[in-house]
Amino acid sequence: MPVKFADRMSTVHRSFIREILKVTEDTSIISFAGGLPNPELFPVADLEAAAVGVFQDSGPQSLQYSTTEGYLPLREYIAARYKEKKGIDVSPDEILITSGSQQCLDLLGKVLLNAGDKVIIERPGYLGAIQSFSMFQADFITVDLEADGPNLAELEAALNQDKVKMFYAVTNFQNPSGLTYSAEKRAGVAKLMKGRDTLFIEDDPYGELRFRGESHPPVVRGYLDEGGILLGSFSKVAAPGFRLGWMVCGGEMRDKLIIAKQASDLHTSTFAQRVMHRYLTDNVLDDHIEKIKERYGKQRDVMVESIKKYFPAEVKITEPEGGMFLWATLPESLSAMDFFDEAIKNKVAFVPGRPFYVDDSGENTLRLNFSNSDEERIVEGIKRLGAGLKDFIARA
Image (tube, rainbow, N blue to C red; front, side, top):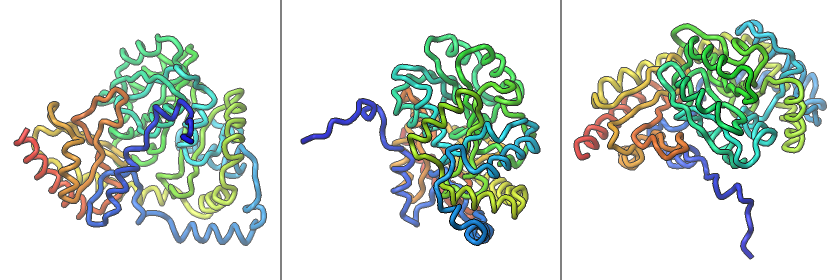
């Protein structure tokens, strides 16, 4: 007997990036595809020591069920870091620990979205958010990203539509484009958001990975006081495998999110939370982040310089000041999806840009990840892509 699946499953597909990663399991392929931190920078020994310490000091408690809100000392650490690094006053009671920031998106969808509700996203937008909100049969409104943030006229027009529940944005080193909102655009977004029922959701997994330029305050707390919701993660600054993220929110919204999380998984791993807290208190996180920034900054520079040397002049790229990605745009008539097939034959992979668009556009765009390769492989991979692009464009 055939299974009758929920209607929502007909509109949601497998993650295109996850499918690409299966192809890149071949170690001979140089991959710029995944949004992966560099495993050479994982603090393995320090996390091992933290785990041993947790078992020694609180073994039974670390293996027990825990509160849905999350381990209080870890929430206190996050709140104190917001104050120290961003000048933002956040109460530990406003922080909900989640199983990665991806769970934040799932919980927000469960709490906020009915079928047909509208969600504003950036164009191009984060694929994980597109996939998550699609599960709740949201209708997407896209706002073009300019070099310094969203097109404000498009954003205002989108906000004026009916049933717009949220505007989801990655304001620092956006995935996939690598772009960052300027102070002017942040203030402009905040001005448009004030006084509306639409929630601003700021996802900030890459904000601490700035290796050049000047930092900007986050939109949500820096310009909107306590309006909006802020998402964070330890995945890019410590260990993605721990699946530890959080969201900052208060009042009735937090209460509803807690109910949704209780229905999902009761709580995030007690052991992982305690080990992370032990690691954070026994070590200086800023020292570790500096190592990441130094490595990623060099890898980014090598990729940009190699692109300028080997890519055809017709290909345009972003030059991010942090994060893990840059974005390339081919001549308008070309398909990055078609070029992907040729690139794989030459043992190099990237992510075609079309999955980051909900309107099937972006055919001539692609994302390159510079964090998960060494400098030698970056040079060789970009050299192969450049040679392939020259031939691809010449045959177009």
